[in-house]
Every structure is written in C-alpha cells, then in structure tokens.
Image (cartoon, rainbow, N blue to C red; front, side):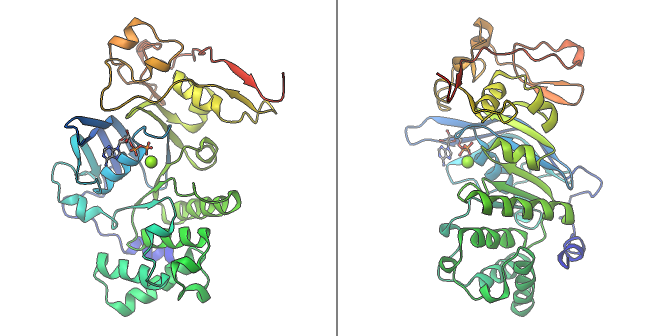
Length: 359
Ligand SMILES: Nc1ncnc2c1ncn2[C@@H]1O[C@H](COP(=O)(O)OP(=O)(O)O)[C@@H](O)[C@H]1O
Ligand SMILES: [Mg+2]
C-alpha cells in the first residue's frame, strides 16, 4: 500500500517531544464540567492509560462513564464548560496539559479521532474529496493541488472508489461516510488514532469492514489505537489491552486475555455477564441492576458500591486504591488486597442469572 511509507516520512515531532519517550502516557487525569446550577461534574476521575506504537487499547464501560470526555481531553477538544483539573497527558514525553498550547500542535498531526459516523460530522455541502483535501490544507499547510492528490490517495486507501470522490456526504452509504471520516482523521498521518464508538451506528457487516480497516491501518502504519466502545466483542477481537471504566474511573485494566478470562472487578464481571455468553452456547444474561452514578454528586467510596453485590461498609466510605498486580492487571476494588503484588484469584460476585429460553 502506498500510504505506509508516506505516513512515517511525514513524522517530525513537535518541539519538546522526544522520540525515545513513550508514545502516549496519561497519568492521574481529571476532567470536570461546570453545570448551569453551579455544581461541578467530575467526568474523568484520575485515569492512567498508555499506548505504544502498533498497540490497540480498548476502553469499555456503560454510557456516561467518561470515555468520550477522556477522548476529548486527549484531543484538546473539550467543550467550553469542560476543563482538565489535574494530571498529565504526555505525547512522546511532551506534557500536553502543563503547557496547554501543545494540545493544538498535536491535535490531528500526532493524535486524531474518529467519532461515531454520521452526516453531521461531515460538511453536507462539500464534496468528499474536497473535505479531506481541506483538512490537509488547513492542518498541514499544504498547497491545494498537493492536498487534492493526497486526499485522492487517502480515500483510495480507506476503500472509497474513485467514482465517489466527487460525491456529497448524503450520496454516500453510512459505511462510506465512516471511511471518509477515517480518511480525514488519517490526513495528517497521526501516530495515535482514537476511535470513539466508530462503528456504533453501522450495521454488522459494515461494522466488520470498518474494524478490519482500522486493524489494517494499525498494523501498516504502526498506529497506536484507542478504541472506545460499549461492545466487548469488538474489544476482544481488536485489542491487546482493555480498560474498564465506571463513574469516571478505570476500575480494572490489563491484557484482553487476562481481563476477559478472569474478570476480577465486580463491575467487569457484570459487564461481561451482560454480554451474550457464546462459550456457554446459549444466551445467558446476568442482570446488573440500578443506574450509573450521578457524577455531579458522588458519595464517598467506590463509585460502583451502590450497585455492587459484594459491597460492605468500607466500600461506601473509602475510595479503593488502584493496585497494579504483576504489571499485568490493575484493579480498584476493596475485595482485593495488595497481596504483595501477586495477581489474586477472582472473587465471584453473585449476580442473578437469567437464562433466556429456559423457564
Ligand atoms: N459538556 C458537558 N457538560 C456537562 N456534563 C457533561 C458534558 N459532556 C459530558 N458530560 C457528562 O460527563 C459524564 C461522562 O460523559 P461521557 O464522557 O460522554 O461518557 P461516555 O462517553 O462514557 O458515555 C456524563 O455524566 C455526562 O453527562
Ligand atoms: Mg461516549
């Protein structure tokens, strides 16, 4: 494929960055929004995350757990009522939070995002090719002709046929629009790509095609991929590591294999239980009762405690610390002791099991 070489050639690091430093490292990131009633809502409550070149990290969690807010913060695209309260986002060692301005320099060129595909995300009155070309002109300052040529190559790369180059967004299928969005995101040859529910609006076959495309881009370009989705099967297919978010915190993280085969946090167990259980050869649904927390008025303690079947007094009083076990798994749950760092055996939460088709 023609794009791969260009992709790496185009890479020159922003001032202050160091090629030997980790690609993307997020430490203790806190993000909040001011609400109209004067309260502050903490949407991201101290998360740690890192991505290496060519690595895919999945972020999963119910709606409202802070996944998109984390993505917007990393992109420097928080809405006006949002702010980063503390923590660091380091791109190749350059702290994007401390200096504010680097967020603008890394946006699109180093770190790009694809949101859930829709007509809204593309300008309805601009032809697809012009839209990609415009992004290249604006963001890289390339002359119009070169930008149009590059746009054509990029669109071919993501599977938009030549005869669709002059189409308007509404003339494209949902899958083609999402491919075009991906071309826009890749237009400045970023090193990190964030997909925020990039296939949620698409039917399963098109979803599979887009995921395959993302996977190919990751391997051919060595992209660090952060894939945000509520679909655990997608993470199982696509990712090396996974972070499970609840109420703005990462409650469990680790290799996909470890976390999905031995989920330890009661919330991870509930999430996995809520997915159809293919291994059991039947649809088994474990019911997770209750609502996600109101992040604007959080009680002390573990955010999951009100819904947790294993919670005791300590869980509602003290925040569980995030403990790293054998560099393989992190857990924030009072059920598990630091244990000298040795990976503990999972404690099963007694969720009610509802077997469909059996009465
Ligand atoms: N612009 C905003 N103003 C106020 N609250 C917001 C804003 N955007 C998101 N939130 C709140 O932040 C929390 C996390 O939202 P979000 O990051 O969108 O979660 P997710 O992507 O996991 O569904 C939610 O409680 C949501 O209501
Ligand atoms: Mg979201």
